[in-house]
Image (cartoon, rainbow, N blue to C red; front, side):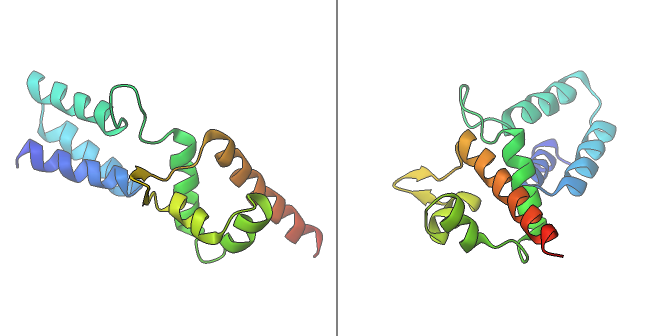
Length: 133
């Protein structure tokens, strides 16, 4: 078992928000790579996968929770409705951010305020549906 390959797997699980496999892979690494150098490499890697560069986070924990929730419920969430009614944007705009597409040479991402708006939209829709029953 080569540490570099196992770290790549861990990174892929993180990027794909595969929480169960991420935890399992992390435990595998901690149990099988126990030298001081290996532990430092694992810890350094964990720190780096959460960062795009020294100063810029890939994703905040809010984004991770939002993306995970959306992946789990993508078939029932009215993305077109949310884009139009809460952002005054197209569904394509919303999907670009959800999928982190490259737009004009940059990764399309939600701003902090957009994450709050999206969370509000989901809660508001839930209340509207619940109040009609």
